[in-house]
Image (cartoon, rainbow, N blue to C red):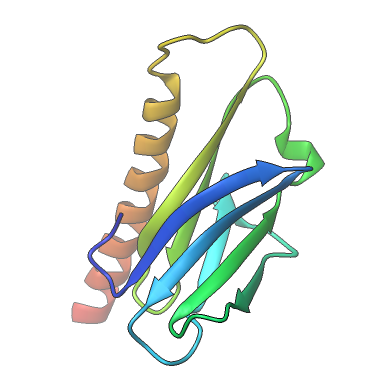
Length: 125
């Protein structure tokens, strides 16, 4: 979870669609981007629930992302470029207590930090 005003609580993955509850202190919907291998996913939707400041996030998992190994999806707040959550698909051989999912998430977070650092360097020049 990030320190931004946006929080994400995963619900479930069902019929190829991952859902989560997004909460924010702002009155408008947050601008969220969901990426896989640093590419934004299409078809992501954010629908306001009956509760003020709460939305349901729906992320259709692309067929090309369903393959052997570890696949990590990052949910980022576009306004702050902070990660607000993630989910991971693991398939193929039985992985048990495998650290590969954590390593994949760390790599994705490191890539996000590198982009933010480069943008910061360009802005302060």
